[in-house]
Image (tube, rainbow, N blue to C red; front, side):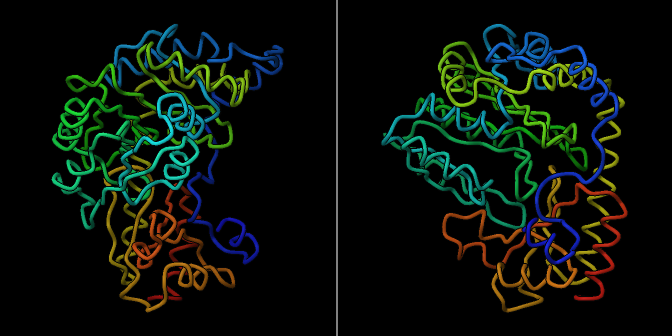
Length: 367
């Protein structure tokens, strides 16, 4: 959709990246690292200074005690961390539980690992799951469950009670949890981010994934990480080494600086993203969409059926045509595309000018 948007001269609210600058101190730190000739391979599982920064922040914010030497693997983005974790821990013939709709890499990642994804539905309007359906998904072949909170594409933030239910099933069935927590700082309306690894029985069976991309507005730097106890970290590091050798050395040094930003940075992040969310959700409701306001992350899912009988792909292409607004068709987040044919996703990680331009177009075309 980003390519289509460029061709059509549209406003891009599709792909999940900011159109504003990454933090200036972080960029300056990267420049200093390059000038200091930190341009050769770092330690394959991460520069020591960055692993130490990750360990400090993971302990302080997530509540997960973390040893920088044995528990942290720096990867080329959270995307690589996810496939490395699956390849390291899942065998062909295993099953992996995935909540649906899902970030589109999870299903293919399972297939690449030789596993069969088993989908459990998140249902609008609050994107909750049926506890009985989840319990039924656990079986003798279940090896792992992927948990993404805050959630892409819906913005669902799993509650402590929901996570406790997941944790209980993991312990009961001896199942690993691989958690994608990349949006952990982008929360709304007083919601709390709870890391699954902090719940009883989960520390030894959880791989916690995060990264620089979203919180520090640097999706192109490809700096991510996973945190797990040594028994899980050791095989993940082996797989990571053969996948990519390592992430960019000078950017790792800058990332270490970024993880040390003070509380004011994260407070401002929350304020700014709340304003962006509220601005976009207001316009989407004004033009008549059924909007599922997110509790976290920076996306808004909407139901298009009030506006059209077209499916999601056709409607998205119509909306971007001739300088319109680019979105992501909802079917891309479902194993069966028919389940998402009535949904599209908007990204609001954009400058206020970008959101205002999109609002003008949406009012003209749909209002």
